[in-house]
Each structure stands twice: as structure tokens, then as C-alpha cells.
Length: 48
Picture 1 (cartoon, helix red, strand yellow):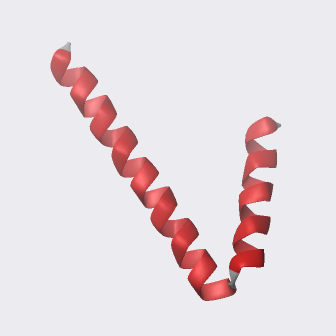
Picture 2 (cartoon, one colour):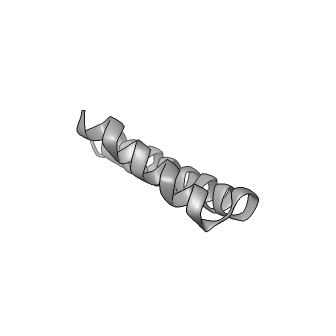
């Protein structure tokens, strides 16, 4: 059970890091405004 839990947390951390890296890449590539727009659209998708 502990192994499953640690695997879950490791996956979660990797996912969070990947999302943060993607947002940073978008912000660097397209500028702050575009990154904010993508983030807002992403939140709308989650809400729906």
C-alpha cells in the first residue's frame, strides 16, 4: 500500500512539474498574455 501511495505522489509531482514547465514554455514562447489565456481556457475546461 505504501508503495502504491509513493508511486501516486511521484506521478502527481511529475505531472505538476510538467504542467509548470509547459506554462513556462508557453509564456516564454508566446508572451505572458497568451499563457494567461491558455490557463483561463484550461480552467474553463476543468469547470465544465
